[in-house]
Image (cartoon, rainbow, N blue to C red):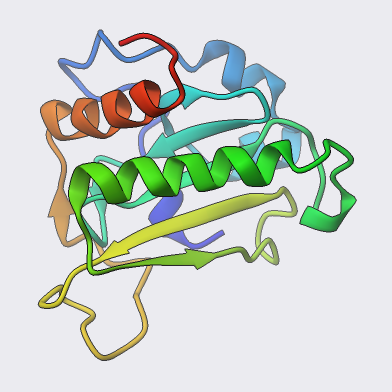
Length: 160
């Protein structure tokens, strides 16, 4: 997983309203726990949505499978993970209004299914070229992360 998914092991200061990551963290495999740290935003039926306060793009999120598989074709959930991932992409698109949404699945660094969502804008720092997931160009405030969390939770009808 590119470092764009890494952040502090706890929620950023002032974000007490965000869910704790304890259940999320405990459920991940030891390999994944040893390699990444996330800020937990939303729990969906088949995934967790996470974000880094410092990211390469302002609305970047990572959707992580709750079930440990290395490849999406290994899921046997009838498309629930994919549907949840597309719900997150749609919620971000509705709230943030990007020009384009980029989707990336790798897993060669961390062998656990996760999807990077990169909302793109006409004049973003990577216009006309690939995204550098290691760049820390945007510092997202607790209010920024809450806006993303609320948009996803509302779309998922989780209550806000």
